Length: 398
Ligand code: ADP
Ligand code: MG
Image 1 (spheres, helix red, strand yellow):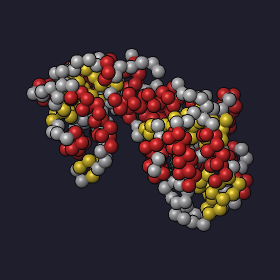
Image 2 (cartoon, rainbow, N blue to C red):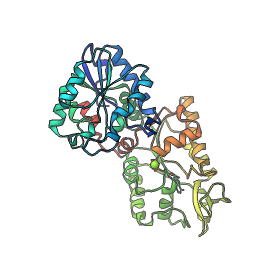
Image 3 (cartoon, rainbow, N blue to C red):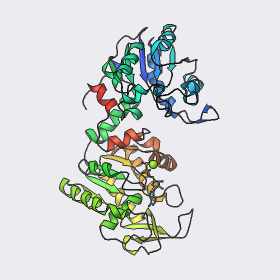
Image 4 (cartoon, helix red, strand yellow):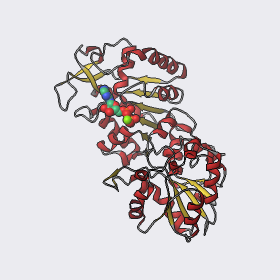
């Protein structure tokens, strides 16, 4: 892993103004924070800096105000949520740059924590305007990026500022980068990837990148139907992107050349209606009837996939194997997730997973805490799986 500095390298921060980019883009309901997971994720970094006597200035975006002030997207709305998790009061500063910000910061004492107003109230944030980044850098002495979830965007508060102040990874960012490095950067082989979910079209770049990186590519979910169709299987009424059969064939070819084994289900669970607990059949993929839909991977395939994982040292997982929100089509996802969790607990597998529905599926299976690392970063996690550079991370390494 090319190196970046962490809080271990930051030195004496007493009385220093530390700008900490965090993810405060929390879901709200009735004017209050509805889910404080992201706030809690930022806490170790905030506490550590505050305890060391820094003046902690939290920088974040909130919603999509598109460069204009909008009271419904003011970060003042999350102050109480941040204070609740921190256990003491938090100041609010009504701008993140300029005189308003300077005046607010000037009255803070070592150890204080303040939230600066939504960075996206300024058009320069999303444009990564140098003048905006300069103005941000004037507010602080040091910069800490703790928001991996925003690192796929080259914005003023994620990228521009990192070139203007001494820049460090916060604890959550550090943990995420270490986990991702262990999964794909510098992994122990054999490496397996599970890619599922609804559509090939949303994950073409993920699949193309992974065939060159992993030893086993396990394809499940609705997207497996497109690959089965490319192999000449009649998938009946299943979700299937017939126009992507050429893309699927190109991925088969790339995998062959790279020595990556692609695993498709050979038995599947089918139903005529997509509804909770309909009549189902478990059949070989060649026995799907014209009026049936494939909604989950079958038990024989799951057993074979469990054997693949038993022989692997590393697993990276994005996308459920079936339509897991609708019982009983959660069965394969839950079973394989439990296998991965057990192998991780035994110490034979490093398991890293991410993706909105994937996190929900692992929580549903009750195994998220047993995985080595579960990323809640969404878009940034997918771009990382696509092998794309992450500007917010690269700026920390510069
Ligand atoms: P993530 O959010 O983890 O990246 P995706 O959004 O790509 O995952 O995929 C999740 C969706 O895929 C779920 O809503 C799930 O119901 C759907 N899905 C999985 N398998 C099938 C299938 N066989 N047919 C239809 N939908 C499926
Ligand atoms: Mg999703």
